Length: 471
Image (cartoon, rainbow, N blue to C red; front, side):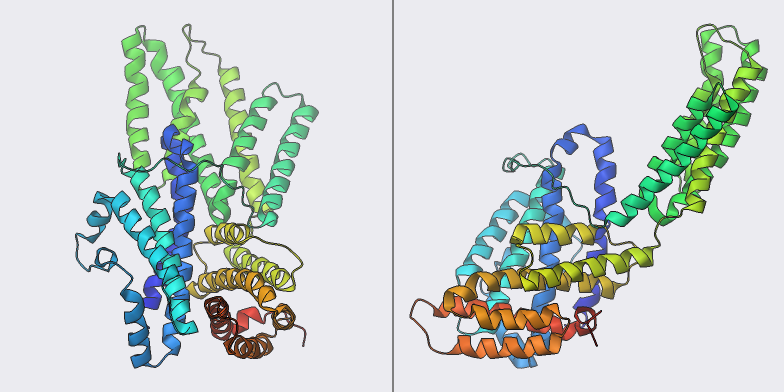
């Protein structure tokens, strides 16, 4: 078990990194954007699979080796051989060759595990969480079938992409920065009656909106963009006033532009100073202002150049004066917001459905900065699992006449007293273990598996779940 933890945490980091990659892919394909719910569903499935994997691994780690092996063998009997790990170079290709068939295998295996009768809460937890993992893999395979254009893939589910706001504060900071930068340039335009002030505002807007999603990298990128704009202005002046006046044909005009644009645009694909080359490429033509009848007006050229530089400089200065939230602060806020929502869920102050809770935490997982510690991502996955188990218990226990005892245990959890919550959940588990009606044993066993998953998560991440508790 210990050697799988780094693998799981590394996979969580890679799944989080999918979000910006999917955004870039949407920019390349309008058809892919139409299927965006499928890709969001696929990423959500990977998060669900990670949460199930974490719960299974945590539980098996608590058991003696022999019991853990025996329990794992019971559950593995319900997992087809096609889904077992294969440590060879061809394994990824095997998943991509026929994702639809493997998706069907995952769904069938998951249903089998959920319906599988077991005798202990431990086996019920392992079976249900493995089924959850397989359901998540099935969702991911549906997205993979879309990407490899598998003709046998099922029709995309109807629905819209859920709007997720993991944390409002970064958006409010970005909005305040945009307001300040645009307002300052507009005020300068009004005071000076500058004829190209509108163009300066345009480039200020481009700077503050285009680079804001880059968070802590935004200032460095907009600074590089400004340097590239300066270089583009110098070279555009050379081409416009030194090269083009000697050209009288369209072929000559095309050669003059191509000698600049082709090598500079090609330089964008290399990793060194990409921002500079992007600015040099996209700003060259607006600065050159080519027309059927070229106008060589130096005053107009300098006015346009100055407007672009002022707008870009204003955007860069706004990121320096009002910087984005640091990765460490954003990570702490995401963890604190999740813990707050979990406590509200425990007290019953909010009525979350499983889908709403999972969508909220999936959004926060996707927003975790690259610099977040593996432990912090694990804590967010643990909170996801605990919230889902709380919702499951709230649906079962009142029907068994144990709603009061459940509320007492959750009250301790909401107060940040995980040890007391675990003790009260243990008492509830003993009540559920008593002989009951013939129709209730499997229901009680599932409730006990929920209790087991919550207790183990609280024990493993007690420092997080107790954070901010009153002394």
